[in-house]
Image (cartoon, rainbow, N blue to C red; front, side):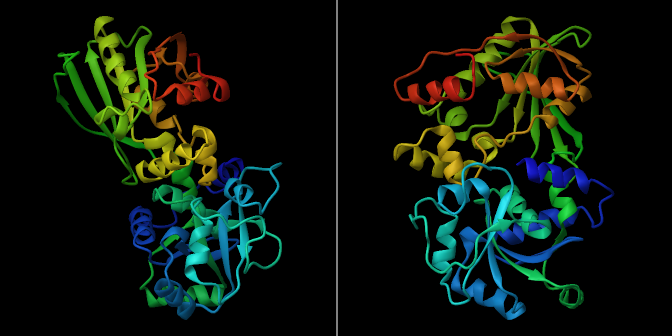
Length: 378
């Protein structure tokens, strides 16, 4: 991720394309369609690896005869035995033979397939992904897909011809990196009174990214004094735990417990962040669950999928607090990363308030991993 963040900082200028370009590119990628990613260094045509089929692979090769390469995060390449473990940030590109079936390429992105340390059909040693190739992996993450893509490098003349055709969705790599760096601003778009079982005096306030991304919610409980340190909880959405009361995690307990705690304290704010599965999305979280059932712990399962152990960002949370007029908080958390992140983004954490719930027999390993590998105070 460090390499991706660095690339993002280098391109955070004025948007070179309309804001609608990102949503169109994400939608096309999720449909298994090719996306043109324009970059000052490397332009590419990209397909999501997990949606690769013989049909869309043939379409891609009809558009361009350029050699195909697979782009994987370094973590996924390490899991496949294609790269050493010394370096885990950024992404790698791997050349593939023209006659390699789509299923073999598709399985590169999927830990369910065991290809071994020397998968067949690959060319020279992997090289670091740059420009549009690096953006392709980031775009796949934004689309909540596995972080892998098939790309064809496009020259300037070919790029101009494809743009004149106008039938391919396109995006600038700068826009992709800007969104990944979470610098897209938030707008306060709607709010309403919503009495809750443990906090009848509550309001929901919705914040939407200006690029049309997923909305985040603030639950304002009581009438907190913004001039003082406000009791605040940052809660990443968890469909299985929050809604279905899954016993695999402690998220549901934390959500309901924090609402009750804030109400009992006289008021505060719970920020409900659209970052399912530590930022990898619900479907990928279910994939991670299968890997956990096979013996991997929470962090290793995410990394087997090609993600970082935790993909969440907390800049949106800091921005929401600022728009609510809150500059200092008493943070209801066991996660030291949340404390550090809010401080880094200009929100003063006056106190960390413990927020611990007993295990239930199904989540003991999950909680142990959080404590031993992520440093949570449990």
